[in-house]
Image 1 (cartoon, one colour):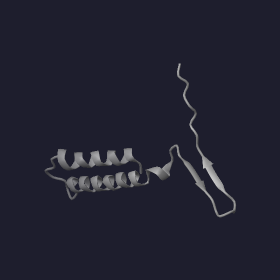
Image 2 (image 1 turned 45 degrees about the vertical axis):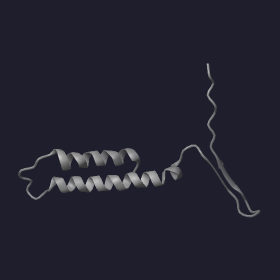
Image 3 (image 1 turned 120 degrees about the vertical axis):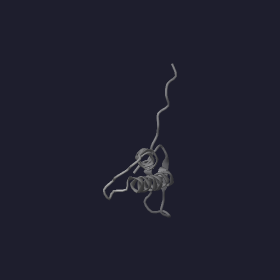
Amino acid sequence: MGITPSLILVAIGAILDFAITVTNSHGINLHTIGVILMIVGGIGFVLSCVFWSSWGGFHRTTSSLDGAAVTTRTTTVPDREVV
């Protein structure tokens, strides 16, 4: 789950919890569902922020094993030409 779906879950949960008034729900409590969605969205947002650097982006990774084979992954971004 990324940052955007997490924020969408939080928003939907907040709408269900704070903006909807239910008089007769026949066994389904929308306020509880809203709280659950906000908690799941918050956990997804925190995990997305914690693991942000391992999910991609423009960075360089180099690993070596004391004289053994070396694996290198390099991602470069070309410079933009200014006109």
